[in-house]
Image 1 (tube, rainbow, N blue to C red):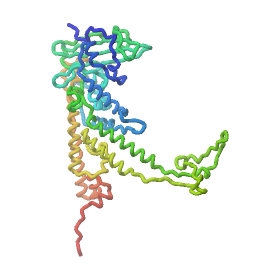
Image 2: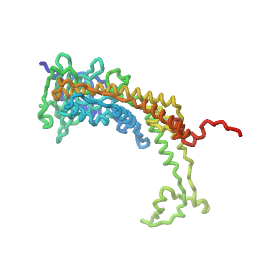
Image 3: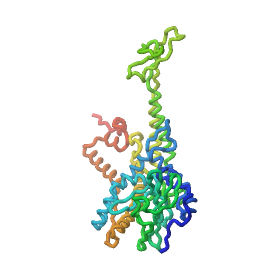
Image 4: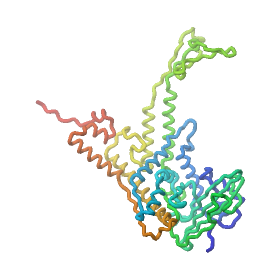
Length: 465
């Protein structure tokens, strides 16, 4: 069979600095890969830029974060909320016990790694032997080709080793087509510079790679040897099948929320009470080289500040207090509004990020936000189900069980909507039989504190004796 690998072009002169961006956080040159490796990646520079931004945001290193602006890490909160909801509602199994045992071990940590997939737009779950799998986020693999349905069928998985003064790179290329089945090619390179790919070397030069075949063909394989998940978001960046981060539409709002939180932090810091006190009221505790050193007790270091008030004041005004009024209520109100806008933008329900008691929401608004979250979670679940279906097939293939007659079962609950309806129904019953007070019911379902809820209760008619 003719090898459909990387091609035979010379690669020692390739500037591969950006190819390894998943590890070194750089962008790889698309044109160089296309020319040198005879492969045209299915990802544009615009997508690579976005993936880098998403990864930085998810890691708390957004481009707007500096010494004055701190990250609230809302990106992590968003991905964690979606991942927890999806996984908690999922039951997945295989009808053949032996294969199911392999599958259950393989997906044990899927909730953790799904968060990275949600953040970067996509992820691959790749079997690496037995019941072991490797979770690869979108910032650590290179898509080469998708089929018409968006399934990833050709992809490069890079791996890097630093041994002594040398840098080793392994490129594992999966090529699936109807004519040849699945062909997996492994090529390795060595360089004395982390910024270049270097010279091609035999795969067995690195001990950890010596058992890998340079070329393997599976003619009967008609599906990918991994599961591929992609976020259910329209790619308006370059129109490709590459996944888009679950929080991409809210990045500007997240930036404003981080800035607003920093305003709140500064409000408390700048508004600390300070007593400006004349240095003559402080006693020098020691003298160093003729200079007097003034000190106050440690608990008062942030309260008292010594300045020279006596000169020109005829000994008056020994003390001046600086104690401005805090404006935290307005700042917090703005922060909560940003959070609610973020919830709307990414498809979360009100209260997932914001304080549910901070603003009055009608039952209709609450239910609409629940429906929005339900729709988003359902779309994620459908894509994840396809990913796991391919993963089970790959596990069955590598464990020689594709002919075992197995069936993959994957179901999801709809507790986002059902639980609230049932809970409200139960509260209404408790309200009717007197085990729940009207103000408690209103406080819970209208987002009011108990005192406000009590004041807003409808007045009953007074019976005149």
